[in-house]
Image (cartoon, rainbow, N blue to C red; front, side, top):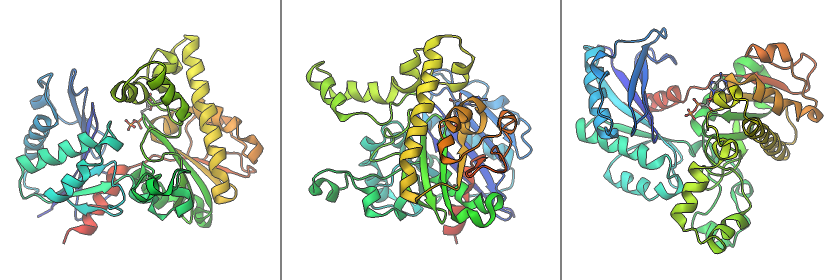
Length: 393
Ligand code: ADP
């Protein structure tokens, strides 16, 4: 009988899931879907492997205050109806922070869950929700194996130099170092690079993961050499609601001159900054692109300026650039953002093909461009499913 794997990616307002067939382990999920609007007006959508919408009648009404635990109970009921005789073998979770101790996918037990909870302050937007999903699965399906796949793991190939802050050694020794994130996405892109770049896949590549959260990873030999996010997922690029790299003096000013406490500052930097803070309109790139508010266009311009600057800062870590890959919601869909960033990188010998860019083609650089530019869809769920497959007997 066919056995299946469930992957869960639990965020603050969304819960994404996908179901994979263990026998074929196709990269395309048999069923995938999500709850959105958690904590406000939750909605459920699901589709089959062809992308056709699946019946969600049982989940048309969800309590407005349903939390992850309740939603996962409803999801299990719904899955049971749709999977019929196919037994669920394990659940794989995207877990944002694995700290220093978790550098490979790991079976979860109570002890490990407690250790992961200690990392919640380092990823307050994600880790508590990732762990809530694990606890919910343990409650509704005790005994079902659960596996954590960490966004930080992919970056553990980096040199010590790339991981250090210029802080007193004692702090580095206790773990105040650059961890990096979006590793599941980078892992997926690294895996498919040979299909698009042939032998050059092992060359000098920067992947720009531009979603609600955003970061870049400089790779050589398809391994992480340097990345834009550091100790927390607040660092680096400007994001939907997060500020990205900031002069730490601003934090001191907020505390000393404005009397803000840690909770207020966390809220400001994680939830009220980025595209939302600068535009005053939205954290959503698509909405900003359609807006005629000058603050919206200023926010997009700042986003691209900072992305190009951070990309340029990563180039020395790999000694040049052979290819640039755009991925995730903005990277895959916004021709405007890609063009704005690439135009600022022309000095690298990067020549964009505007027509190919406008139609979201896979290769959007001119044939003579010294830097090949690709647009590739990411698939973090497939990486989680594969990790589960490898760990399970
Ligand atoms: P998450 O990090 O939550 O997985 P996504 O990777 O789905 O996020 O990216 C969400 C972002 O992608 C949003 O800012 C959204 O506006 C943007 N996006 C999606 N489609 C488009 C589009 N066609 N044009 C511009 N931006 C888009």
